[in-house]
Length: 80
Image (cartoon, rainbow, N blue to C red; front, top):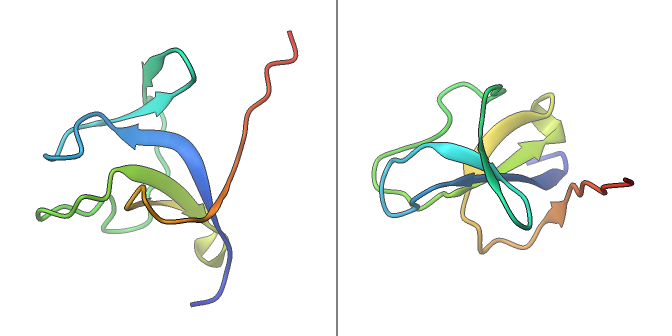
């Protein structure tokens, strides 16, 4: 596979079942009002892919992936 993967702040509310995804910050959860999933994502069928990443090899579309994987992160910095 070619390309680079990056974690986002997207995460499934309950990884043990097919729950919705939210944006997680250090203190809050907020509903995803915009999505950019790669076709056939997020995947289901009992998989515990609870974190959202983007992949440069697929035009930065979103993918759900096991949170335990070690990949780079996209970080947000509050300058206020």
